[in-house]
Each structure stands twice: as structure tokens, then as C-alpha cells.
Image 1 (cartoon, rainbow, N blue to C red):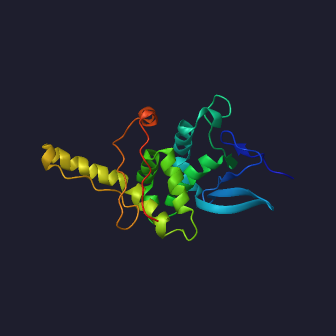
Image 2 (tube, one colour):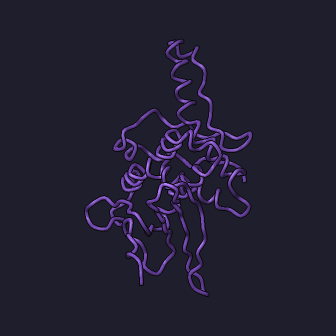
Image 3 (tube, one colour):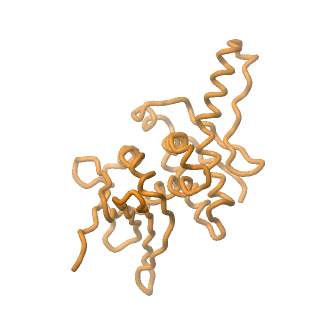
Length: 218
């Protein structure tokens, strides 16, 4: 007896690489992201990330909205914005990579207490930046708690705190020359990254010129 058919989040290649997001309903359940790569020997599946289902329920609708807003016309299926459903959700390679960056961050120690900050920091990234960060954090040797996975946690969770501190300092010292410079995100020990601009609307964020990817040494 087979289960419900998978739900496609937008257009997903039938015979190419893809991702699958499994969403469970039970409070103690999990939300899992799996990659499916086509090889000469057939499909090869790999577990990428998993977070508690209860945590996912707090952000799932907003995550779906953010991913849908960034999709190009050729990525959509029909005119309605796609959404996630309980069970199996198939994702295109581009969408799956963006989501992996967020879920890897949410796996890190302390992420549950910084949930809103992490979500905001992830939404501030351009799609190209998420793809670039996926390539870094998916490289051999990267895993929870170290390397680029831990760097993502610091970069995204500290985004709001860094901006709030800078704005507070500017209010106390209105003279531009006296305002302290904003502290960079910490993506890697000794490295710096772009600080997100303050609260652009989703429409404005899509129209603004894309910033060059954060260039850090391997």
C-alpha cells in the first residue's frame, strides 16, 4: 500500500537531481531534508539536515513565502505561489540548496533560542549568496558544530543584534564622524562578511542590485 503522492514545490525535474523535504505532524517528529542525485548507477540519496517538527511549524509558512518570492517564472507551476505540505515535498536543486543553508543553521547548538534572528538573517541573503554558502557548507569535512556550518550560525544569528547595536550607537551620537562603524558578521575566524541592510520590504529586496558573493579564502 503506497502513501500519498509527493507534493512538488514549484517545477521539479522528473529525471534530474532534486531534494525532498519530509514534514511530520507529531510534535516529537522531525522535518528532514534529503538530496537525490542521479548517477550512472541510479539515484543516490543522502540525508542533509533535520530539525524538530515543532520548530519547523514556527517558521514553515514564512520560509515557503520567502522561497516563492525569489522564484523565477520558469520555476513556478501555475500562477499560485507554492507552499509546503505535510509529508513529502519535492524541491528543485536551486530551492533545495537555499533551504539547506537555513536548516543547517537551525541544527547548531543555541539555534532554537535565536530562531527569529536566524530566519531574518537568512531572508536578508540574496539567492546567489545562499547557493554560494551551500557550496561551502556542503564540502567534504563540513558538519554540525564546526567549519562553515558553525560559521553560518554566527553570521545569521548575529545579524539583528549587530544592526540593533549600531543603530543604538548612531542615535546616541548623531554626528556621522562620531558614529562607530558596524561590526561585520562572523562567517569564519578572522574573516568578515557583508552586514544586511535594515529591514527592506520583500519587494524592494527583490529589486535591489545583487551584491557580490562574500569572498572568503578556502
